[in-house]
Amino acid sequence: MGDRMNPGDHVMIGLSGGVDSAVAAHRLIAQGYRVEALFMKNWEEDDAPGYCAAAQDLADAAAVADRLGIRLHTVNFATEYWDQVFAYFLEEYRALRTPNPDVLCNREIKFRAFLDHALGLGADWIATGHYARITRDTEGCQLRLCADPNKDQTYFLYLLDQTQLARSLFPLADLTKPEVRAIARELGLANAGKRDSTGICFIGERRFRDFLARYLPRAPGPIETPDGHRLGEHQGLSYYTIGQRQGLGVGGVAGGGAAPWFVAAKDPAHNRLILVQGGDHPLLQSQSLTADRLHWISGSPPGPLPFPCHARLRHRQPLQACTLTQITEQRCEVRFAEPQRAVTPGQALVFYRGDCCLGGATVDRAQP
Image: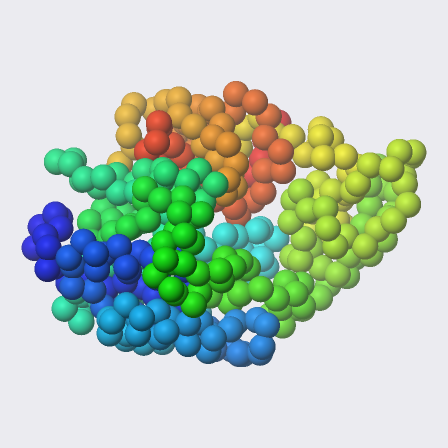
């Protein structure tokens, strides 16, 4: 089969129990495709109420499938998730970096394990409720921004490759979130008002420090200002991220002024957590950075390097003008037109040209 859809093609949609995938399934059915659904369970370390509510999500997905009249398959990818995503997640935190597990989860689970399983069930395509757009031409597939800038998820999809995009569909590309909820209400879907999922991909919302402490032992140490004034005690450098404001457990003022405290650096040699006051403190600003694990969606750099483009360091951040210089096949240096706040090792740096997502890299080190 080629990379063009035809009415009657068999589409397997990942049905999560949320409203986005439910409306995506409805749209595919309305367009004449033969639709089945797959619910993925990918975490089974615990099923404590209020954390990973997989049972409720499965019930919601089953209700949607019943309402839409489509078959629902279930599969357990817990082993794949642990080996391909969670082990990396823990390794990065041990290295005092702050990983983005959603990015790797998309590549390894939602668009690899799911894709392979769906093809094994006879599907021609997979579909998800992601807010993103795919265009296709003679040069391949392009990942592009969607209609809703507040929901656009290309940032989390930059690790996809041509093979994955060629078999994938994003039926919500032209819709905003309010429009999706309105369609769900018109269809009488019970999950029309279900709130968006947050927290770690497939693990859900939980007290993050307590969760991480189950896998990484606490290693308390001093919290200090850059000039060595002690502010308190941290529970372990792994539990904090650059730019963090909440949950620091410090009070009082060092040197006057009541500006909030932010994490500016980690000093592993002395097990110190360094805080500064004020979100615009110079130690939180970086004009450039280096990044590794460079990935291009097209399979190669999009033009001669260095080249100007735009990038974002976090989901929903406005696109930032920058110049990218590739150092090696896996590493690059990026200089921004304007200083960037709280550049965080381990986070995703995603590149754009116009509305096209080019690919991205993993932040290694901030530079002045």
